[in-house]
Image (cartoon, rainbow, N blue to C red; front, side):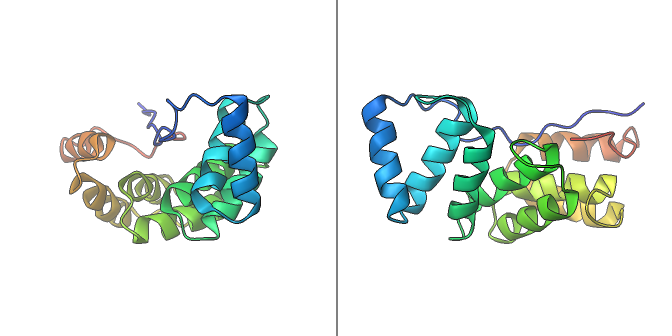
Length: 162
């Protein structure tokens, strides 16, 4: 039986933004402030303080990701993986997960493991999947700990999708 894995929840899911916050984020984001770009992307993604606009979320995640913000790289990968605000592109998702995973971001390490496990954007390679699951598990990332337990019990098949 195929099991559904969960991607990292956007870390800013609990941010409550108000009009003044949005204006401040926009000004700072336009000046190149990476944290403001990521916060603004999350606001657009969640519809928090602004109308939900996934295309704008992708735009601002891209800006922050290009400045090597690992959370933004992972979030941008998620957008490409699921087609949020853009077309589904597993290779691009994989590429952004690699960048964030190599910086040590546990959620991205897990997501990279899922890509290897499923063969999404990369040739399927269960050994690489396990490697990246372990990297995330070393940081006590719960989904990685769970999947490693299941793999140990030989209960897991390649995932249908994240």
